[in-house]
Length: 205
Image 1: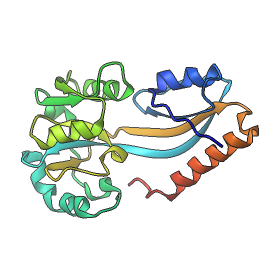
Image 2: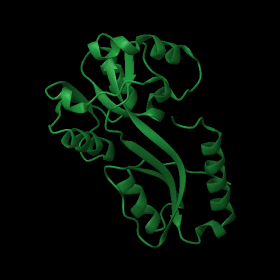
Image 3: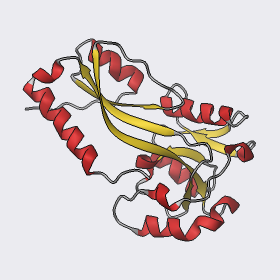
C-alpha cells in the first residue's frame, strides 16, 4: 500500500475528500470556530488539544511558573504541559501587547482573533508565520506572545513559557472520510492506525 501525504488547511482538505481526491483527512476545529460538516462525511474523534499562551521567559507573566515549565522543557519526551500551569491568565490584560500569529485565512489565525475578541480587544499582530515552531522561536527571541495548541508546543524553546488562558480554548482533532469509505481496506488501515496513535499519546490536562 502506498500512502501519499499532502499538507492542507481544513478548508482545503475537506472539499478534497468530498471530491474523492483524498481518502482521509486529519483535520481540526476550535471550540471558538465550530466546523459544520457535510452529511456525506464521517467524522472520528482523535484528540482534545488545549490551547496555551506562549510568552517570553523574561515576561513578568512567566515568573511564577518558571520552575515547573523548565522541568517540562527539560524532559526529552512529550508531556502534558498544561497540567503544570495552575494560574490562568486573563487575555483581557494583554490588550496592546505584540502578538505573533499564523498567516491570515488559516483557522489558527482566526482562533487567535476570536479569542482576543472574546476578551474585548483586537490583537496587535507584529509578525506572522505558518509554522508554530517559527512562532515559538520568535516568542523565545522576545518578539511577542502567541496562542498555541499544546501539541504544537511539545518541543519548546528554552526561553518560552506556557500559561493557561483564563478563558479556555480547545482544539479538537479528528479524521474525515466519506461515509462508508472505511469499507476500503486501505482506508480502514489508515483510520485504525491514526486512532491507535491518538490513544497512545498522553491525555491533555
